[in-house]
Length: 63
Image (cartoon, rainbow, N blue to C red; front, side, top):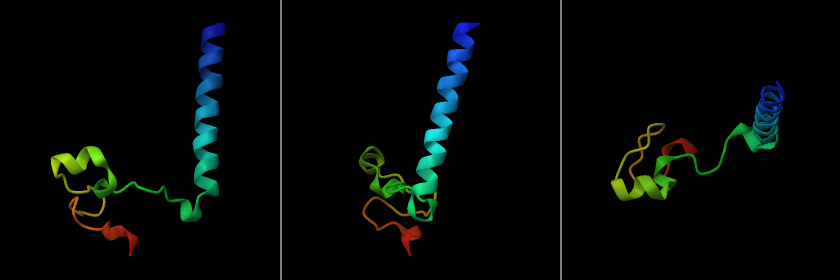
């Protein structure tokens, strides 16, 4: 029972932390979420699923 309560408490803290981060971020957007900014996807040459930008292109959702 103690493990279950501890798990619920830790998950609650994680969700609260994420919610606070979203609230204090400007316009609720996280920096560097475009795949063109992700070094792992840059090696593969994958396009961003959000804006369609290729690794060599600027993020299209910034405009």
